[in-house]
View 1 (cartoon, rainbow, N blue to C red):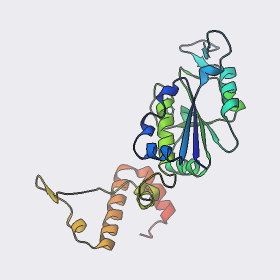
View 2: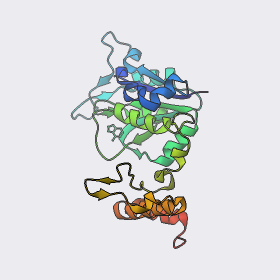
View 3: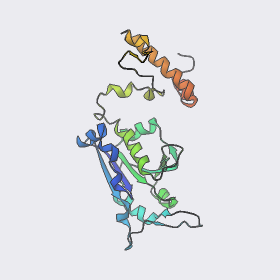
View 4: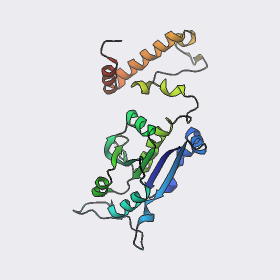
Length: 235
Ligand code: ADE
């Protein structure tokens, strides 16, 4: 069965957007995954199709109404699909969570707009709040596209060669080693000799050492986790 992404949004025309192109787009055409964008406004009940209102307690901006969102979720949630809401307050997305989501049947992603979403519908529907990083977007749509992209590329058959996935440093908890291609000398900058040597085992060792060096230098948080997982002093 194809992996399913259902997105609840006030801007369904933003989907599939970039995910209709390249390998993700090919995967969709080949029915390896499916995307459904649901217009939240279709579940409003008044003649003006209102989806938001001013916040109780006062303050700037508008809040998405729980009754409208609940009706949209009722029509969209289905057994097994992970119910998510994109918000900068959420748990930070990482490759471990992406791997879990990609391994399941799919996701239902609610995209917030305005100042926020009525807290009661988040709790009543058990939505998991997910952030893609410590910065504020104008809405959840680009965050949802990012989450879905990260999942879809892990679906078997979506990426060209299966090997490129698990050889990736990030799957090991490291940042990627540096890459080089022809010309071997470019503007007086040579490619590291080892990469031209044909010694595949030494090249693997060099790349791993580079990935470790770069991770330790740039991301002490990732480096600490990597060292814990791989056993201190065992390398
Ligand atoms: N909506 C607005 N900013 C966001 C973020 N950083 N992550 C997820 N959803 C968002």
